Image 1 (tube, rainbow, N blue to C red):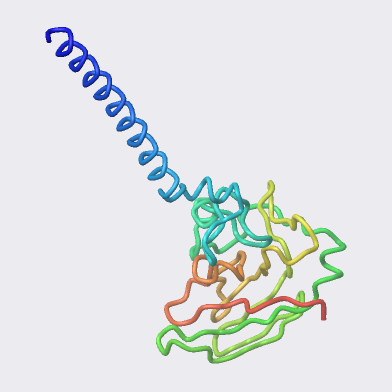
Image 2 (cartoon, rainbow, N blue to C red):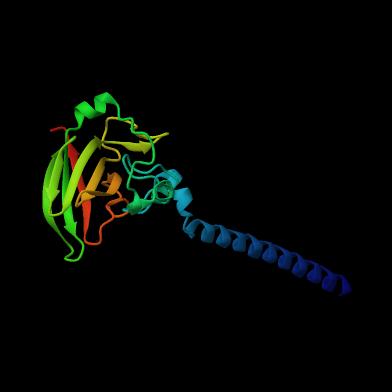
Length: 203
């Protein structure tokens, strides 16, 4: 009788071990299943090329011509923005660039009215007038950079700008760049008007 009880106890213990082992195995399977169902990090999806539709790129270069991240801050430190009354560094625009880009489309915006009051097509070295303002376009630059001076990094319109001298009643109020991509940061020092570069062309 004791022998039978001992055998039964041994059998039950073994069964319990098997059941426990099965339970652990099942739990592991469930965990693995959950992990597979969990969404992958976006960085991992980006590497696999499986980002959700319309999601901006991650850890990739910006599209061609897009201003680099932080460019506005860099430019702000390089320029005094609206207080330039003379060029603060040499101008060295390549001859090929000067021959290629001949016309700039410029808007004069009335800030008090919030609208453009005049659109002009201005050639290099041309002076145009609007009221008491006198605007001279010195250079039309497709890819303006500051590399020990004002120059063009290429002959492609990656960062279009014009270099201008603006006078009011004969007094220079601004001498510097007007960027197409940064229209409000670098502009004429005027309480009412500002210049907007709409684009440049080969004429």
